[in-house]
Length: 152
Image (cartoon, rainbow, N blue to C red; front, side):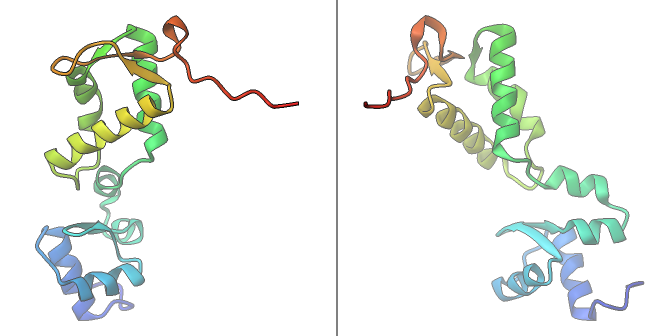
């Protein structure tokens, strides 16, 4: 309320967002247009601009998701260091680093999607079996994705 560029309604809606209470889709759209909140329904969180004004910058960083490349690099670095990883080990590596705005199911889906993206690109591969996956760097034993050769 110390900043008079926000309406009372906006302040009350931001308070609801911070307390993780539901807001309507119309209200969420309005706050997003004003760049006051970020995230997706129902997991909205205050924007960087509001976090700075309210001395909640650390909380903002915990809620904001980092880009997929960061998480994929963590997986690759882990596999380069330890040569192999179970799904549980990758969960242990990534789940604590994912956005606090995500539920446990959403975090697990995110890890699955990151792994599958790396697998589709040929960067990693699974040498385990369905019930017990074991992930390794994809270029072991010549598995790396081959680039198509230019035709002359």
